[in-house]
Length: 447
Ligand SMILES: [Zn+2]
Image 1 (cartoon, rainbow, N blue to C red):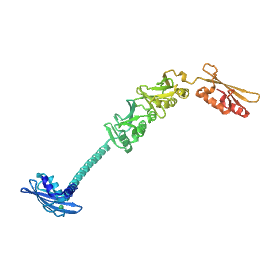
Image 2: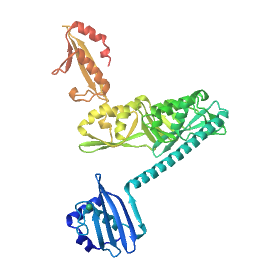
Image 3: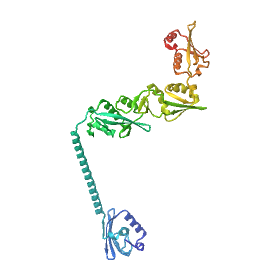
Image 4: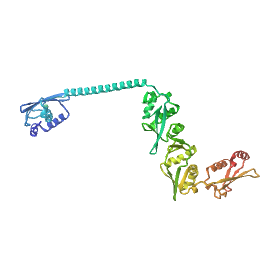
């Protein structure tokens, strides 16, 4: 609908027109009707501001001229100065289309209608949901009834299968009787075990997941699944990680159905590359082609469908170093090399191969120790230590500067427990006779 701008300017002052916008924006028009009477629109409308109702009548012609207006409030001078109520009603009138006429609006009635429509819609949705629920309950009972008619199988067997993809090992299962079926969701399987749920895996296999129906090897698998299905790779497989590989090995190495072999050999397939620079020596791990998994107890290696477990000695010796080298190389300051060799290289050397720069010079010297014991006239016991190199030659350096092999550390420690060391003569002495007796009962002089 249309009203000339001039007409607004003519009948409204600025404050009233501002009030009009305000009233319109806050939806204060509670009811309004418009009819077209020849070339004239007859408009009646009321506003409701906090319960105060004002009613106005306005006539506008089709050319957009305001012909008459009146409002029951005291801001309005009929046909002279229009109030905010009249303005609000005219603003709503602007928004109407010719096709809206005759127009009738009642805010209260409208809300009620809308509310009713909404409730009806909700009710319909609720009824539909109830119908679906009923349907699925019927289906569930129908299915249960059908399953109870079926013969349950005994001697059910789980077949574990290991898969390796992209440096990951995962484990899935088949459930088998005369025929085998893949267990597609391990979580559901465990829930079925808990609830003794009857499931028809196929024509040849129906079970209520009662533990009595499974053979003993399968019960072991079920325990394993229960414990580790949270480490799932996807719904049907458990990932084999450092957290469960020790248990996996123990639970599966005697399994006759599993598709991999198990061995326990110290394979010597780990290669450490040594590079010596002026101040630092770098050690890098050259990863073998298979998958290495460092468990909490043992180290494992998987390749060609064989899972190998290294000995406990080997695993203990390699674990801290390998755990580090798996991700980063190690840079050792050269002044730490003698101790690095004594404690670390010496421990790992039986199990790994070293390549790169020659490491012989870093290894602890093959030192042997000769111990001379002498008892003088004063009943004083003196002990002289003679360090020999691998050629049998006496080492003349100060023994304190030598990095001794670990096994000699023990001997020296025991000596120091009983004897006093003299820096000048580089000998150990024992003065007290009783101590001599105690000391010789210890087996320290056999070195
Ligand atoms: Zn008014």
